[in-house]
Image (cartoon, rainbow, N blue to C red; front, side):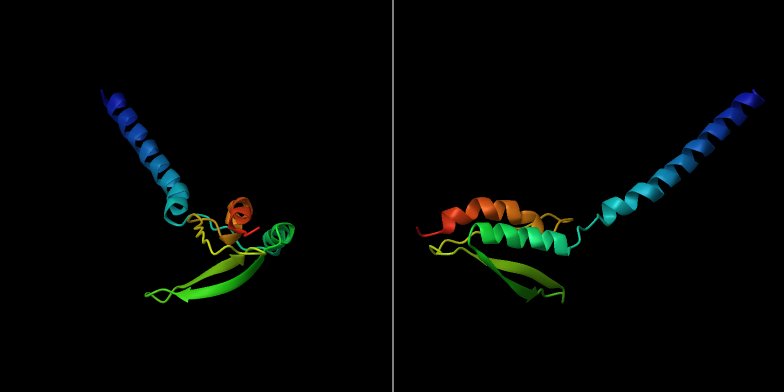
Length: 112
């Protein structure tokens, strides 16, 4: 009977320690997800795409009520038709991550 109690206690200890290790390794990723940095390589790819579709980008900043600075781009088609599209990236991405959608939508915002 004593061996069963010791075995149960040992199993519970191993499970508790394993849970602590797994929680320590995984939880920060859920609470603080990876953020894709704005690299010069990603920026160069965006600029190359904009050149292909004859569009330009202009940076702008907005300060939120809590003081956080939000940065974005205004992208203009070569001959804009007046339509607007607002693209918002996900939590871990940045402006460059939406360039594929911009490339798809820019021809529709051009008055040809």
